[in-house]
Length: 258
Image 1 (cartoon, helix red, strand yellow):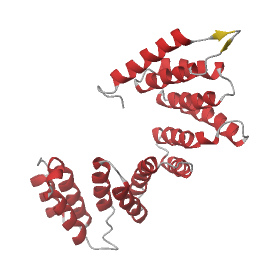
Image 2 (cartoon, helix red, strand yellow):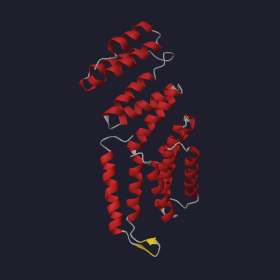
Image 3 (spheres, helix red, strand yellow):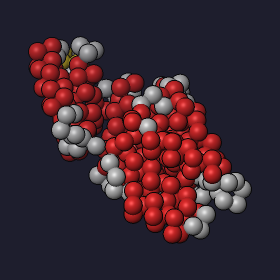
Image 4 (cartoon, helix red, strand yellow):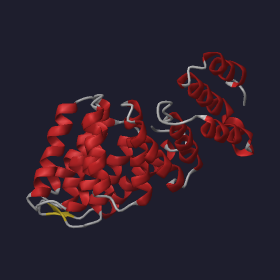
């Protein structure tokens, strides 16, 4: 989601890329001879995408695909084009575009290094349609083809949420345990800890240790502004234990604390 802080950066990227194209383009005999120009076009397309100017992004990615046909950057632009179609809710066109890239990779005509990005967009498209099982398959494929620890941690976090929604509590709990330890940013660490607590199953374990941990978290200075989320989670644990009065007490008496 574009924010007020990101938008000026996207505008600046588009402005600089446009100036670079105008100043340094070497379009001779129907071909662009400056190899850096294609990168400028891709940056314009990506910046327009993040600004949610999808028509501009769509046109830019199509230009790259047509101009640099069968080049590596054309296949990357095709994935971005598919992503753009998905954001425009044209899910079938998104999948069709991604399938073309996947087929070319399988044929050895497109770089295998694009697989991580490709399956990430497949997953985004499935999520947008509420196809969580399919999204989970694509997330696992994206992890398979990724060497980035931080990227894989984010995917594990998303995967954990899908398992939690499906009530696969053991699997979800294991994933959130990993992401709470692997995450570099505080927000994901904190959310992972709460989600891990939500994986509590009263049929197989006792809630005391979980509640003690949550209470300890609520007393930590770094969590002061997040106490409402902690108390809500405590309430959910009590609901699972069928201790309804205690659950509502936690949510109503503490849930609005900051």
